[in-house]
Length: 375
Ligand SMILES: Nc1ncnc2c1ncn2[C@@H]1O[C@H](COP(=O)(O)OP(=O)(O)OP(=O)(O)O)[C@@H](O)[C@H]1O
Image (cartoon, rainbow, N blue to C red):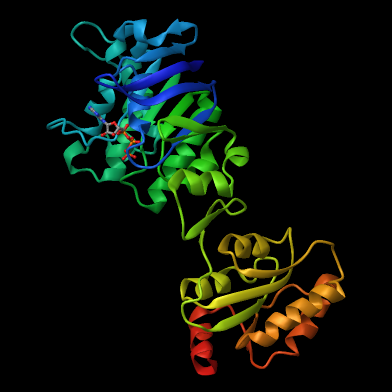
């Protein structure tokens, strides 16, 4: 559907991103990710024909996109940029109606069919209530919906969006994310989107292109591409690690308080405890954890000292003793109500050896209080 081949983009003979080879098919979302100023918008603007390529070609179906007439292109591709627009005294309906321009007569008259498409576009983004509202009096989230509805009214095959979530709160971000997914899956649109929020990108994109140092450093399914090394390297992150299993970052375990805590956890029972301790500078040890456990993945991303069990049940004598050694070094042990199966019976026994135990009841305020009493 849309394909970039050996593309170089930039300004005034300065190449910003070189050697771009990407493809997005009908029903797919391609997310372009990278640090500030790396050239995501420049690439998008070139694909959207606002900039000529410095090298290479962009194809839309089998046509060279930069050679298509604007009137031809407008029926195939719609673009939503981040820039805040000030269209004057127009309603939501008027703005969406602009999307019908490629189809209206010389005088821009709207047919009944055009009006129906405008209403349906508003409906698709859940914005029927905004049709009569003045655009200038809308919130950022409302405006974003109207701009996307305007793009949909063009009845495009390809939708290009630059940072569509940048002014949106959590709820509207999720709504927009679901909307893009729906447009790709149900309307078979090919969508190219730049996005800062890698957590969202991971969840909506079929393909992801990571840009750094003037080139695409990784391209493919987000689940394949976004591992710890790639994401840390992309953003030059030093004090956190990308955790592939949860699709987000965890802070590193740094001992700034000189207080040592051993956490017995498993199956996610330790996630919030580990985050609280690491965030507050405790030196954290944990285990015994199986390497497929979600707490293991989180602790690993935090670079917590983990006693790790590779074989399933029961915990080996060697690992039990290693955990016991760590546990005895620690000021306190936190029992997080981990699931007790065959694998964890020795973990229960382990806790009996602790000098001081906190039984975590799910409330971090209580944990904080108990920690301050004990150490
Ligand atoms: N109109 C322009 N003329 C010249 N240089 C520009 C122009 N627009 C952007 N640039 C430069 O091109 C580079 C890439 O900018 P671009 O806006 O594409 O980055 P980005 O990855 O989208 O950044 P951000 O995440 O901050 O939005 C930057 O060095 C920027 O200064």
